Image 1 (cartoon, one colour):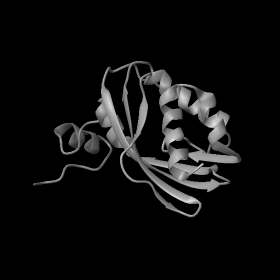
Image 2 (tube, helix red, strand yellow):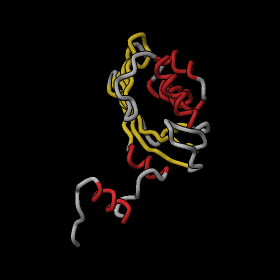
Image 3 (tube, helix red, strand yellow):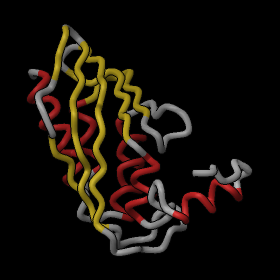
Image 4 (cartoon, helix red, strand yellow):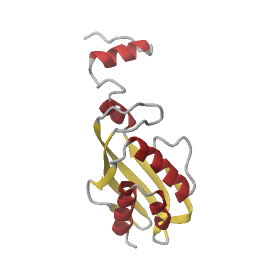
Length: 156
């Protein structure tokens, strides 16, 4: 499988709502990390459980490519975005009904045409702002939050 075919299948797995869809894409020693994983996930089954938590809160979640994938031997960088509507409880956060678009990049090491190590980077703060959990940057709400956190207010 080429890197492009592999990442098209990866995006389809994240969009499909079936946790077992990751297994054929991952090698036997698979590792995965993103800003929401406190430690690396070490199997396609663990990744499937991680995806199920996303789908519980965002049942219409879908992943799309946002640009050309860059490959160099066994390493691939794939720009992507996740689009979804927050319709279910997510880690104690009640549904907001808000539509979010979270841009990111997946950096992967391949082994034998399958995913060996994947690390996904995305802006967790921006996702929280889109959900209304945190204030938008530059607003009075952000300044108040920073003041409560002990950063004070800047004079302008």
